Image 1 (cartoon, rainbow, N blue to C red):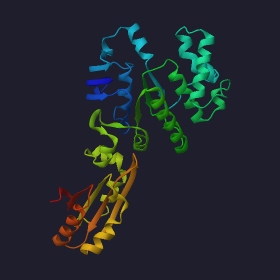
Image 2 (cartoon, rainbow, N blue to C red):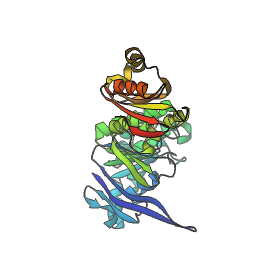
Image 3 (cartoon, rainbow, N blue to C red):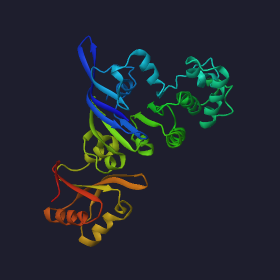
Length: 341
C-alpha cells in the first residue's frame, strides 16, 4: 500500500517559491491500477517523482507498506527503488545496447551474474511479446516495441509498484491500446500495483480502477473510475471527462432553458429518451451536446438540452426525465445552474 499524507512540494525560482503540490492525500492499495490525471502543469510528474523520492517533498510523507520513504538513508532508498520502478514517455533506452542488454541493465548494476541476468532478460522479453528481439537495437524497433522493452526493463528487479509517467503519450491509438493491454495483463498476472500518470481520460477509462484528478497541484476529486465518470463533481473533472460539454454550453441562447441529463451507468443511455419525452409529454427539445462512453461495460455520459417554451414545458420535461432510473437531471436557466426540483 502507498499512502501519501499531506504532501506539498515547492520550488524556488527567481520570482519566488512556486507550489507544485499542495497538501495531497491519497491511498493506493496493493494491486490497484491507479490513475493520476490532470492538464499540463497540474503537478502529475512532480507527484510521481516524489513517490519514488527522485524529488524530496517540502512537507508531508510517502509511506510504502508503512515505511516512511523520507526517513530512509541512501542505501535503504536504493533498495526500495528496486521495488518501485518506472517507465516514461520517451522510453529512455540506451541506443548503443541491444534490447536484451537494456533489459538486464538493472540486474547487472545490482551484481547479478551475466548468465542469470540474461536468462531473466529473455523471460521478460517473452512476457512483453518480444522474444525474437533480444539482439535487436532500439533504433530497429517501433515506438510501441521500444516501450515494451522499457516495461521489461522495469520488471527486471521484480518490483511491487510500476510507475507509468505518460507512458503512452508518444504512441498512436492502436499501439496505446496494446500497451495498456500489456500493463493490465502484468497487473493481473504478477500482482504489481500500477500508478498511471496521464493527461488522457481515455487511458484512465480503459485501464484504471481508481483515479485522482489534479489541478494546480491539488487533488480536486478522487474515487472509483466508474463513479467519477458517472458524476464528476469538480469543474476540472468535468472538463477532462466531457471536454465538449463546455463548448456545447455556449450554443444556447442566454435566455434559454437548459436541462443537463447525466447517465449513471444504467440502460437509459441506450434508449431513445428524448424521442420518448416528445411523444409522452409533448416537449420537443433541441440537443446542444451529448457524449457517452463505456466504462466497465456500463454506459456513462450526458445530454445537454434546450427546452422551448416556458416554465410549464420545463416542468413537464424535468418530471419525465427524473422518473427515468439511473439518471441525474439538473436545470440551468439563464446560465445559473440549480438542481431540478
